[in-house]
Image (cartoon, rainbow, N blue to C red; front, side, top):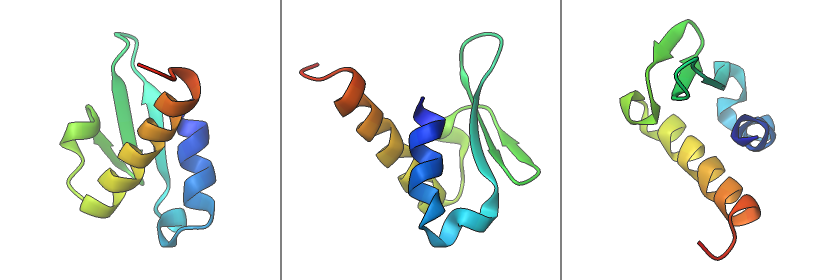
Length: 69
C-alpha cells in the first residue's frame, strides 16, 4: 500500500525516471529498490530526495490507514 502511494507521488515528480520501488522482504522488513540498487530498509537510502519522497509516502499512508495514532 505504501508503494502505491509512493508511485502516485513519483508519477508527477522529477524522480519518476529513477525506478524507485518499495517491497516487503520475506522477514517483513522493507526493501527499497532504486534502479539496480537495493537498500535493506528506508534508513539505508543515501539520496536525500528519494528518502524524503519515501518518508512522505509513509506519512500519507499513516494518515490514511492509522488515523489518530
